[in-house]
Image (tube, rainbow, N blue to C red):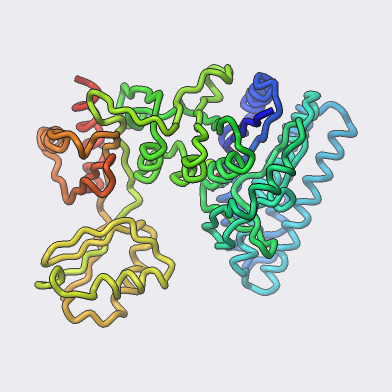
Length: 457
Ligand code: ASP
Ligand code: MG
């Protein structure tokens, strides 16, 4: 039977009410599944913090272990009545926590952690959730078992903190390992390098892990359960009447996620595009009918009458500006700068240049480091290096954006009507996105203005 890969996020595992709903969802599928789980809400951040503190505080290991143990023990007692199953599950959790404690103690003793160890420690959130959920499913007489990525052979390219799955090496073993007609519960967020090291798929990477598994087993769909109403025409916290987007193409979903939509990890669709596996988004607080997804992401490309499908934003980008009277015509500047940034492990999101200014769009968190890296290069044509971090990106996404006249005019007019200045803009980098840099303080108004123009008229 073709499997469905079902992913539950950490925010789906917060309360007993939500866990009840997850159990109901799993029952509603009424078929073998591969269930992928994230860490409990906040646990990855907790581990990031513990990792940092452990370097100079030995007590952190014990305290962290206690905290994580207490976090969900009441839920286990509540959901698992069978005393043997309960004690087995608690034992598995304790074993995991003992391992974690040993790693943290090791870090405290040496005052340091390798990248490999960091990735390994951060994967414990997902490992704990998997054991936890598996115990609860078993208590409901559902036939399930935990399958760890290292056991089933989910092999990665080995890049710590930002790995990609290697499908060439993974597909056969993963498929064989998950071939039984039961429910497998797999911890998300990581795969394993060829030399058996835990490698994370990047923050929020459980979606990607689930997608990678879906590809390996040739799943009929990847179902992602969230605590929000699918993809909307904009963030419901900013606009009052967002419209549900029932269908998105892979590229639209990827661009929306890249430009800030928090619903999906931007890399989720990568493994699924080629084999044409659809992503179906559900809300755990909505109908638990597994045949009624809110949003379906597939290869189908549709152009709406209004062209724009969604308006998204991100506050996480900033600009590094290289100014000088002739930077546009002088060869080699970008080569030097991009090489240096690459060597420093800094990703470039976009570059917009003119004769007197080169503007490099980067993650805000990388700006200071990038400034230092670029300052250290010999660049005679650059008179001034400047950081601009008081900005936000607002992006309109939809097939047809760059093929139809008048879209940018409508966006600029909507912004101008509300007296919002566009600091910089870019269309055509991808055929489905048009994005605008505005002052951070104008971000909300800009999203509202563009949304009003396309969805509220
Ligand atoms: N727990 C990981 C994180 O917080 C992965 C995920 O949630 O998808 O980044
Ligand atoms: Mg997540």
